[in-house]
Length: 84
Image (cartoon, rainbow, N blue to C red):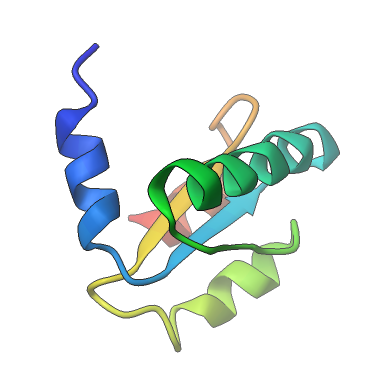
């Protein structure tokens, strides 16, 4: 896999937010957050696993921010609708 575009985007990003859909995904998010800080030098915010929190994020997410969503199946209709 070619991650060059992904890392290029991360380097240009000011804020990285990670949203998860469950406690196992939150564990992965915590690890990813630490690795992004160490390897890319970017601090991240791991958001609570509540759809209401994700809905509120639309008020303060900027075009230069990145939102990473970690979901087990990715088949949550509310989540998919919100991210469209």
